[in-house]
Length: 550
Image (cartoon, rainbow, N blue to C red; front, side, top):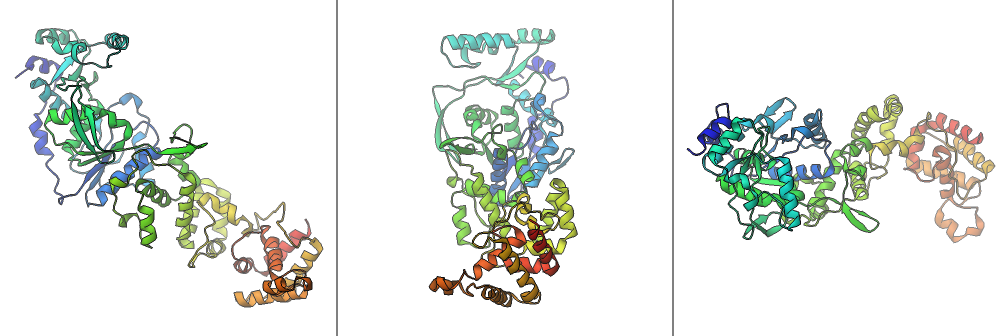
């Protein structure tokens, strides 16, 4: 056995052979073609839109094939962790209906037969494979200090050579066994590096599911695979994990594409079957005619918390992500009424290679469409939940006036072309505030053609005292409004007024507008008949009094 004495000094505890883990984590019992994908974040901060996008795609490709989608936490960089980072990730994803088949289910609970699913708890597994590489001369101990690495880098910059620990620069790969043992016995800090066999001047072919066939130079850098704290680097750990968890598809951000050479070499060196990679280009935003990456620092919509605060339904966000993930999804929805994401088959070939444009206005429009399809009772329940956390006063109002609120939300909803007034739960109060007496304190009224206050008041009082009947259906109600129009010298029909404008002051539409603005202060509202029915005579009289006092 090579490096036996070195290995004894590095691994004080017993290290199981790699064969133990190969047997412990057998191939998954899935049908042919089933995909196993994962989302593998680091608990270093909030989930951003790019991460949600990647996790959504990973989930979708597994669902489409009745495969497995699991959550693995990559926490080998212990310094960057934040408190409750794992719980925050899980909560954020669950809020958007990103639910896992297995993996980490909470900060202290896992589900599945391929764990642990938190990398810091898999140290002994990584040690098994690192030991195997050392035994086979495919890895070595390196004592290079930060200062020595800086010197190498400075020299490479001066000579305009490639940056990295490789070739003649990788001096520790030539240390004798005796010297390594001596330095280990002295307690010198060390790392374990891969002993690369790659040739930078040779190419290998990568068949990326998004980018297509790409040629890249082989890796020749002796990358660190185990750090001074005994934990592996991301490069090494994710290879072992994806192998033992039998991941078939890795969906990740474009920033990892340049790491493919080292990952390709590690798969080959370890003798594992390489999964299929899909590198997703970053989400883009157009600003002043120029496209740039969606920024966690500049763009509030980059944080998934933005959508919860706005009250944009998670379902609408996911519909939008599907439209930017696959360019043919919108056409699918148009051709398949009543169907959704679950009915659509994802296709990597339909993904943008250059980066999808993130358009918040389009997302809001999709949200409008989605909300318009819900029943008023469902909107009410969701609004209760939202306002309880974001607007206690409005929460109390809609609780007090539950039936009226549902009735308001139902105006022009259950019809072929429902209204699309609001894009988020935060927007509903802005759209219907005037239906609550407690909120109805208008500063201005949006009267138009008829704006003489004396005439307006006379029309309103005549309507409510002589023509109003709460039992009227909509047709009868409008007929009575025509009577009011005729009473004041306005045409009963718009067409009649247009044909003989000299005979009338205006038409019935002008009378409708007076009533609409008096009751709501707005010129644009949902169906006036429904508003009149919900308010009732006593409340209408109160609103006439409010107008008279202005």
